[in-house]
Length: 271
Length: 271
Image (cartoon, rainbow over all chains, first blue to last red):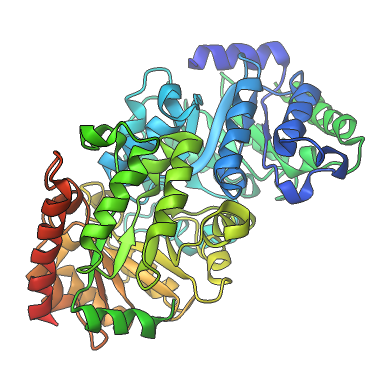
């Protein structure tokens, strides 16, 4: 999917919401457990309920892997069910030596090999350029590189200051921004540090940012939009648990739709 | 598996060799392609040929994922086939926020959930402590944390010097070494930088080190053994391509056995 197509969809739907499909079989409403594939049934209903209000879907791969080969089947069916206009993100946080990252690229981008055909994959930066470049060899596909994450452990390494004054996450941005362009590379930026967005926009004014951590993880959508938005919008703001687990009974779809709509309405005001 | 059991096996087999099962369906000898599961058939023969000479097996998960749900089945069967005395490493380089790392732990450690029951998993450090701790909650299981990797991209971030003189990989070692003990935490250290091993041993004298990159990636076993070994041996040295692709015809097993034996014999001299 091209940057232009993403931007178009954002302004058409007046939304930059990404719905995180972090579907834990242990949290799926009981009445779906009678189906052969409860995770897929749950996702299908969540997608139907939210597709009007969001522009992207982001399954976190851990939730599918945890169920072994069965989980990979649920993931494949879910991906097929997502409407074609929506941007799809494999939240996998992969990264290995070049040779092996090429295999991970095959996993998420090469349908003939794995059955999956995501638009993008999240990648961890620790192993450097050759762990990222193999993903960028697929035309029309995206790498979403971890820069600043929203969890407590982000403080352990990402915010350490280097002798030149930059923090490690800034070094990651500066070093990596020319590995791809803003047409193939996005960044994960934890929304609970909205004050950091100004710093980040100085380094990568044109790149899309994927913002996790609004909602359950505590970030403010107003702050994120104020400090992170650029002329193309340039933001995908993710909400997972706040939407998909808004209710845990047979009315979970309506509750998910309502939550997604609430966020979309707020976003409309910021666009 | 306990540290004591690993050490015992090393001195019994006079080997600290780990065989990397990086099995690419595109490189499996042609005569195996007629089987229903060529990847498993290949691994089975490699395991039979090498189990006498090695103490650990390390499937790199990318190679299995790249084949989707079918690949996960090959992985599950391979893991079941590995002799119980051998230490097993899921080379997955995972890491996510705490909640999600818990799911990755379920993936690799909880057989009931995923069908897999590895002894250990490799984890990337970028997201900090809460991305690692969930793995350590499983008694008898190990985290193998990336410290210094053997690829060209390792230079991008891992060897950057901090104001206190430490390099980032040293900061990772210093910060993380108390998250677990040397009974539950190992480190990945790229063997192509054997001169770094002395630095690393000053910080983590007692931890086991997993050394990739001997062989195809160019490290020297003599250097690694000289600078990395401690009283428990403290080393697992991995070879993947050099062993499993020693030959690509119907004599690949004999060639793999020969390569593994050659390395084991060299190791015997260093123990």
